[in-house]
Image (cartoon, rainbow, N blue to C red; front, side, top):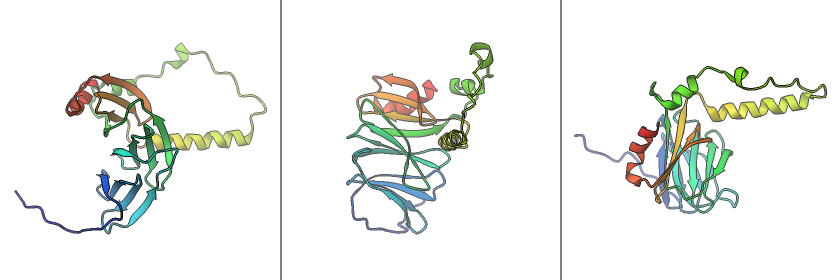
Length: 207
């Protein structure tokens, strides 16, 4: 078994409490004791961006997770009980939501099993025309501004969905609960009374 060797060392002004490599191993996300989330390049440790704590998001980071394509970073905060999805290109929140309890575990996974229940939902034929009434036509006063706004929101949604076909953000807490959010946004499952050490096994069973 090859021995580990140190290849570099960097001094930081604040104590680091969490860190996570990106799926491509070219970036590393850090969360420090002050509640700041930072993104660095691994090659030269150049800082890409930093996101300072604020009253809206919180300052007690308890978990980090990368989306499988490496384009979005998620982190959980204990003091505000919120989950933040952040763009890898700039320090801004793309989406956030609240949870009932503090998060101590976070993992973002791609659903690849063909027999998965989630995949069957994704591949299901669109039968909305059989179950839902036909949508009414747009009013004549539908403005160009409204159209541009809807296109911008569509682009934002597509960024959140990502390139991978289906992924799930798994959240866990020390109190023994698990939540699964499709694409990191839509809660599709909740499991209670689970030992934290069995979170990964339970996720496999649920999905």
